[in-house]
Length: 279
Image (cartoon, rainbow, N blue to C red; front, side):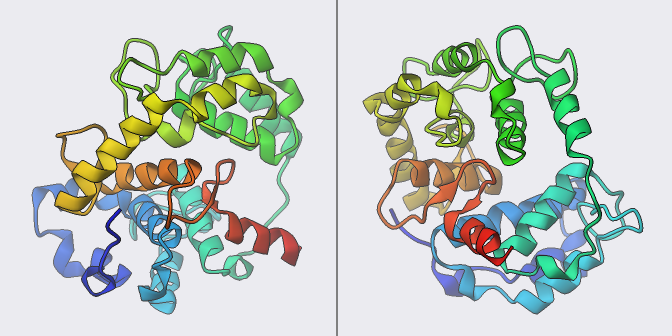
């Protein structure tokens, strides 16, 4: 796997500088996604052990301009706060050991768990809202949150395990929901989650499948060497989102040269260990 050249990695400031904001149509329509883009890119660099090329002070300075009085973070300066961008902001701060700059209030964990459980479906999966269709992405978020809060006992182990198994298609890849194409982004969402202890033999069958290994390995060889990133599937355009999830998938497969990732927090294991040890 070819690793990125640190000299070619843009500084975070360059990603949010005024000169880039109106440079193209794509830049304008994705202006509100800068926080997520920064999180995906920075976590990928961390997994590849290349995070030293980032200016931490510049990054934190920009990040704080995205925080609102409510405490939530926006996707970029001047945008509205959103729970997704707030998560990305916290993950970025965790990467650089800067969580202490925040004034963290008390969270009603029971109400949060109750809401997540209200999004659970009869097939064992989770939707983005109560009654919404189960999707591997929402399962990743829901089960991850339940794992963090010590609430995995609420999940139907066998039912969800079978649902995840059925996401694997003939190519070896995994889709996010029934009748959809495989997507490298679903690799982290559905495969080899140590925190879903209840999957048992299901987890083993997925993680050891030569089909899945072949699917991700083929994609990484084809796309990384040619374009410097990873796409959702072979022959599609690369993007930072699928590059992050592709590298995360390679991490779960213990690919040489890629740092270990914690699938519950979607952060490098050494970052999570540092946070827990500092408590």
